Image (cartoon, rainbow, N blue to C red):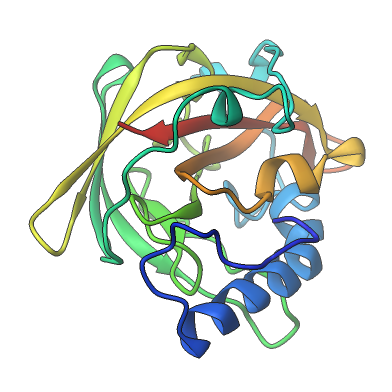
Length: 232
């Protein structure tokens, strides 16, 4: 999310409800970033043990990405078309064999984003009060990299590169297709909130999971992997 949260000029509707949704998104993700990006709630409920040896994302390599600024891909290309708001139902990423249903993610009483259920390794979540995938703005999709017993849905997320494609099936019967712009692994103690969550004039998606080395003392991974993509 970004400090500037006004709706883009091309947004099809600027109702008070949508404006409120964008304001809430900023407050929620800033307040919830400690959990989303620092306490590893997106991929493990019980952290009494280390990650499964089967998980390839436990040592995912860092990748480079141009910041979402005046030099970013989202500003170098013409504004993409967008779709109306609609709940996502399924995420398909052929390159890494992801074919997973969605669950809604909400904010708890403390202002932190709740994680997807830990007992389903093939499930992704989206922040349901934020932007939906395909809608103008930045949609957030999160998934576990592993569980206490096995690798999970986003275990292979580090294998995505610029130009790779994925799709989101929606409840309105449409399929939103996305192309990856870039990916980067950030240290959790230096996570660039404004770059990752910045509001955009295009329909964009962020795929987020944990990465890096599992720190047994901290009972947490050291990094977060973020994949940046736009609607095509």
